[in-house]
Length: 168
Image (cartoon, rainbow, N blue to C red; front, side):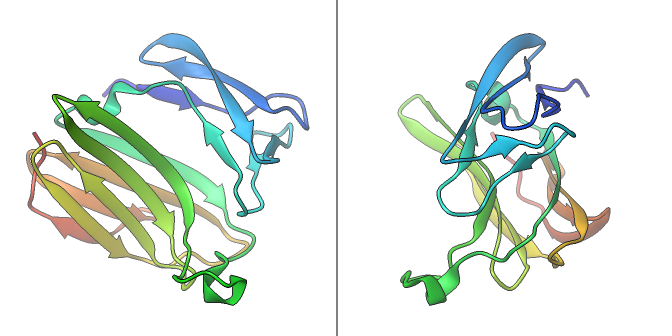
C-alpha cells in the first residue's frame, strides 16, 4: 500500500514548519500553538492547544487505508481538573472532509485514563473503537486500519478493538 502522507519531522530544533509529502507530492505543514520540532525526528506538544496543520489529505475519500502514529506521551490530557466539562483527550490525529454535502472525519485520541479511541465517520457509515492503554513516558505505536473487512485499532501491534463495519 502506497503512503499518502509522510512527515518525518527531521527539521532543525525549534522549527515551526515541517516538510513532507502528500500522495507523492511535496507539502509543508505548520506547527501551531507553540509546538516545535526537536531536531531528532519528533515534535513537542504540550497538550494545551498546540497541533500540526498538515496539507489537505485525500485519505478520507479512500475505501480502505491505514494510519500509523509513533509517539511518546509525557503527560495525560487535562481532564476535569483543568476546569473542563469533560475529560479532554490528547488528540493524535484529526482530519476532515466534506464530499457531496456530507461530512467525514477521522480522529484518533488518548483519553486521560490512557485508553486510545478512533472515531471514524465515513460518508455513509461510522464507528468508534476504543481500547488499549498508553503508558506515560513509554514510546508507543497506534495503528488504525479500515476497509471492506472492517476497522481495527491496534496499540503496540496488538489488536485492541475491531468492528466489521466498512466504509463507502
